[in-house]
Image (cartoon, rainbow, N blue to C red; front, side, top):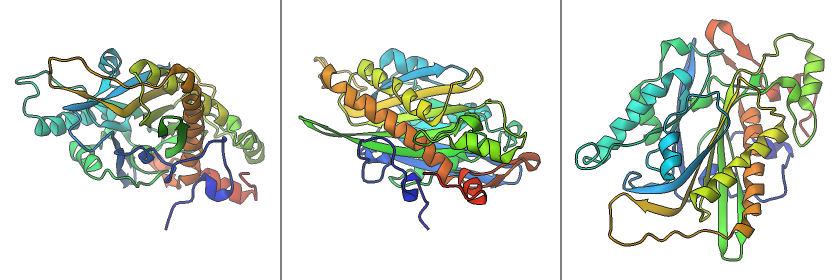
Length: 353
C-alpha cells in the first residue's frame, strides 16, 4: 500500500509545483536506497544517495556543504568544500556507524576504480549522521559494511519515507521522525530544472512544531499534559540535489536557504542539534582524468537565483513534514518509544490542516 504523505491530507506548502514524484529522485539520475534494521533493541539503518548512475570517481559532480550548527560528526565535507565536488555516494546512518560506513564506501569505490591509491590519489567518502540512541542500541554498532553495500545496490528512483533506513530510530519535534523528501520545479527562460531535498529528521521540540503556520505542536503539548517532551538533542541532515547549472559558490548560496524551510516547521536550531546541509548539482560533470585544455562550466545568472532560493526552502519544509507524516510507531531500546504525529492527531480528533 502506498504511503500517505503530506499532500494526501490536503496540505500544500509554498507556491511552487513539485516534481512528478515530489522527491529528490525527480532530479534525473539520482537514486536512493535504504537498509532498515528492526530487531528489538536495534532500530537503525542506512540510507544511500547516488547522484548519477555512472562512475562517480571518474565523473564527479559540483558540490558544496553548509553548516548551520556544527554539532555533528559528518565526514568528508572539508575536501568537498575545498575542491567543490563530490566523488562518492552520500551515506547517512547513526553517529557511531560513520566509520563503518566510510569503510564500506572505500570498499565500493576501490572495487570500481583499481587506480585509487595506486596510480592516482585516494578517495573522499561523504558520510552524514544523526544520533538515534533513544530508540536504538547505538553502542552496539549494529550497522555493518554489507548493510551499506546493500543500500547502494538497492538505490532506486522510488523509495520509502518515515521510519526506514537512516531514519529508523530518529525523533523529530519529540515525535517519531525519519526520512522525508520533496522537490520543486524551476522554470527559467533557458530551461526547466528541479531541486530535490531528502532529510533525516532528528531535531526539534514538540511545542515549536508548525504546519503552514498552524501551531500544531503547541496544541498537542497542551493537550498531552505529559512531561516526556525532550530537550532538543538531535540533528538534521539535509541533502539537496539539483540539475540546475551552478558553480559551487552558487550552490552553497542555494543550499543555505534550506534553513528557511527548517524554520517554517518550527526549528530554532538549538545548541545540541547539528544542522548540516550537503548539496550537489548534476548539470556539470568534473572529469577525474587530466586533459590539457580548459574546462567549461555552465552556470545560471545571479539574477535567476532567487527562484532556486524559494524552491529549496519549500522542498525542505515539505520534506521535514513528510518525514513526520510518513513515520510509523517504533518501540526500541529499553522499551523507549515516541508517538507518531498522525497517531496523536487521530487520538485527539485533530486535523493537520
